[in-house]
Image (cartoon, rainbow, N blue to C red):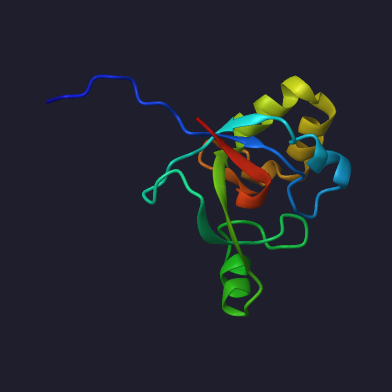
Length: 127
């Protein structure tokens, strides 16, 4: 039997300030927002993956990032993937100044295939 009901996109609500290198005011602006989770082959998450700091870490998908992984500089984090562009569009409705700050800082990750990872401990799954 073919189930033709539309599939719902899993969503998370940011319930506490996400950890990270960004200034506190920019991280605080995520609190209260509901974001659609990007599913992967592992499902919508949370799942554990390697991460790098976006300010002091190497640029994504570069030889420097590969080398940093070999030298033990990545961190491991359990969380939810959200498409970067989508997250910033939602943030912009609540805080244009925070969205602009994020765009300036992570311009290299705002392509349609990039995502942000929100720590599972700062998220609640929205049903």
